[in-house]
Amino acid sequence: MTRRAVVIGAGHYLPERIVENAEFEATLDTSDEWIRSRSGIERRHFAAEGETTSNMATRAAEAALKAAGRTVEDVDAIVVATSTADLTFPSAATMVQSQLGMTRGFAFDVQAVCAGFVYALANANALIASGQADRVLVIGAETFSRIMDWTDRSTCVLFGDGAGALLLEAQEGAGTSEDRGILATDLNSDGRYKDLLYVDGGVSTQSTGYLRMQGNQVFRHAVEKLASTATTALTRAGVSSEDVDWIVPHQANIRIIQGTAKKMGLPMDKVVVTVQDHGNTSAASIPLALSVGVERGQIKPGDLVVTEAIGGGLAWGAVVLRW
Ligand code: UT7
Image 1 (cartoon, rainbow, N blue to C red):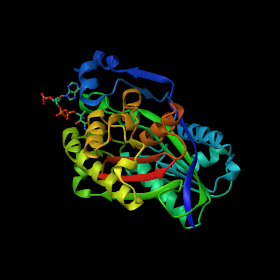
Image 2 (image 1 turned 30 degrees about the horizontal axis):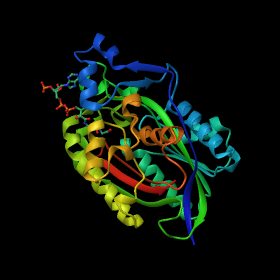
Image 3 (image 1 turned 60 degrees about the vertical axis):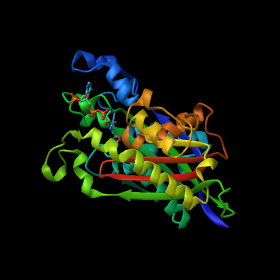
């Protein structure tokens, strides 16, 4: 028997305010046509004034608990993937813990930028596999609108805010690829590429800073590294790309999503795509897409799902799980 981390609930939260591409035309030398054709993005949500990452994470967590038919009493740990925590410390995860009214267990953040949710899932899987926790809330939540340079058209039209959450539960599997739950993970980073995507501020430089990206350079790395990490995770799980029911990729750019699916030999009707409605929500994009995929009736129990993401660091990785 093998202890598996099985998804028993998914949920998400998107802030109320929706900003269409056309809104940027008033203040920037850009167009709906450019944003749509280069990135696939049509609109994104922005957090309201005073609305924070932990607020949104809590709403997503509540939705995941409800979907699972569990309460906060059932949760042993919270892992939040974010690069935009409310405060330098304590962690966004402990703030979620308090907002949920959870007075036991433990909570911490994982920071791997757009790959954050994949890293958080891998960590939660290890907590469950080792017996440290039986149920873990894994959340991706971001307020990237707070680190946008609104005069930089090459970045500010691409990102959005939101949160998604999964509740993982320890269940016994047979140890085969037919088991439900996380079957394999693959994590990578290469700090030589730190200058391709970063925020030019932080605690020890005593500023908040703004996101800076050499988009076309990140693009050059993305398809190859994403297809490669997904293939590694599939091999580790003992399955092949033909067995995949759904790719749920990080939602940064439709052209990266299409290129990765093509490189893996999979058609676009096996890909959950939300980039048109959410933009790039960094660590929130995969759990948002998973939750929306379930809501749309795309992802069903027993489906083989592969998630993959790349972002600042560069950091990238993939998780293969049976829903
Ligand atoms: O989530 C973390 C990982 N991040 C990513 O995966 C993002 C990866 N990169 C991308 O998605 C794409 O590179 C972008 C969408 C950011 C850009 O698309 P691109 O096809 O790589 O365009 P580019 O950066 O090579 O820029 C092409 C042109 C430039 O003009 P020139 O130099 O050719 O005259 C830019 O100045 O497009 C210009 N441009 C814009 N034009 C209108 C850049 N931003 C805009 C804009 N509106 N918003």
